[in-house]
Each structure stands twice: as structure tokens, then as C-alpha cells.
Length: 322
Figure 1 (cartoon, rainbow, N blue to C red):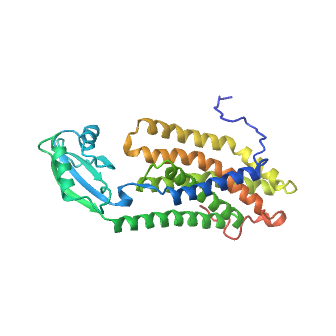
Figure 2: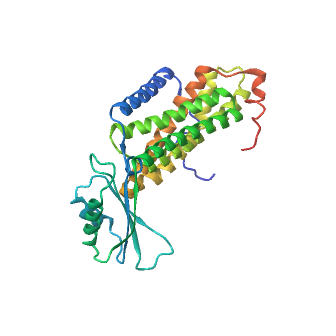
């Protein structure tokens, strides 16, 4: 027989719901603590959300992000983001970067004097450097981005919830939505608590976490639906434990392989993507936890129909091919 790697024994009998109310209570405390952090500490918004100026640079020598950051650090500008731009249409001696600068304290926009100082500092690296474009994002646009980001996360959660309701039961849908909101709120709460930079890349990470988390939730829900038909007399708590145990190996493999890709990027990826990767890494742990200890706890608390009704799982939409 071929050798196969297993991260969990072939058969496990872990009582995941033995501490049902304690785990649900911990999740509730984490969400409330996140809201408290939102109200007291707020977020360390990046340029995308608090406004600023983007300066596009073009040089004949390769972009050295470290050198750019060193010369700009002497200006004391605060939040500065430097990103190299790649395009297959660029010539061999055409090296482009974007420098994003946040407004200084007490100012709504970056002043022309600051922009001039930045350009002069960068010319110390390459006297022939040019600046093809300078774009500014004002407070009004930043406010619209915040509202749009919130609507994107809320809309994605609602859409996933509707899909789960169509495929299963409304109890599954409610558990899924609560779990997804838990993941987003707790992840954002950690960013607020430690004042990590929060920008549009973090919003993209939160949306990705929604998709990752619901994937694991649906797998266990599907196994639960199958087991409800097989074990009609077994208590719901025991059927849930059986379903989670049967999918445990798959859950560990999925989380483990995802972390294999994320952790090297977190260590060696650099400042540009570190916030996004950190949010994703955090989301793997939080999402895996919530799939069992939030979504399933909610369903267990509400209860599910048993008996003949389970033969048509959910409703008339349950057999739609996804």
C-alpha cells in the first residue's frame, strides 16, 4: 500500500463540543473586545483611507526601495509607501516606482513644498530621475473608500449567507454569517489593537478570509447533512462531533498547505505585502477556529430538523449544482 502523509489519525474521537459555551463565550469576548478597540483606539489607516499623494518616479537605474526609503526618512514624512511598478511594455532602462505620502499632522493634503522636497531627495539617488505624474487623494475620496470597503465586506457576507441558505437550511446560513463576521471583526480588531497599518490591501485580505473560512465551514456542513441521514437516532451534538472528526484531516491539510505558502512570504516578502500576508495568516487560524467553534456552535444552539424532513436537505434549492 502506498505511503500517505497524515496530519491526523485516520479515525479520531475528539469531543469538540464538550466546552460549547466556553468556546462560544470566548468568541463573544473577542468580538466585544474588538469593538472596544475600534471605539477607543480606532485604526491606523494608510494613505488609501486617510488621503495623501502618490508620486510616480521614472529612472534609468534599477529601483532600490531601501535607498528610496532611506533618503525620504530624513524628511520626517511619517507614513510613506514605496512600490516598484512592473510592466512588460517598459524598456530595459525604464524603471518605475510609486511613492505614496500621507498628509502631515494637521493638514488635509500634502503641500507642494513637501512634494518638491521629496522630488529633490529622490534625485540624490538618480539626478536624471523624472516624475511623470503626481496624484492626490483627498479626505472625501478616502471617506468614500472606507464606506465602499465596509459595504464590500457586508455584501460578501450576506451573499455567502444566502447561498448557504439555498444549499442547506436557514440555521446553517445563520451560523455561517455569524462565523464570517466573527472572522472579519476579530482580525480587524487585532489590527486596531496593535495599530497595524490598515489600507485597501487589508480589505482585500478580509474578503479573501471570507472565502477561505466559508470553504471549510461548507465541507463540515455537507458531511453533517450526510450523517444526519445516516444516524437518525444519534443526538445532534454527537453527529456534529462525528462530522468534524471525519473532516479533521482535510481541515489540517488545507490549513497547513496554506500556511506553507503564507509563512515564507510573511518572513521574506518585504514591507509591501507584509500587512496583507499577516492578515491572511491570522485569518487561517481564526477561520479554522470559527468553522467549528462559532458556526457549528450556533447551529447546535438553534437545533436542526430531524427525521423525514432531512431527506430533502434545506429546501427546494438544495439540489442546485454549484
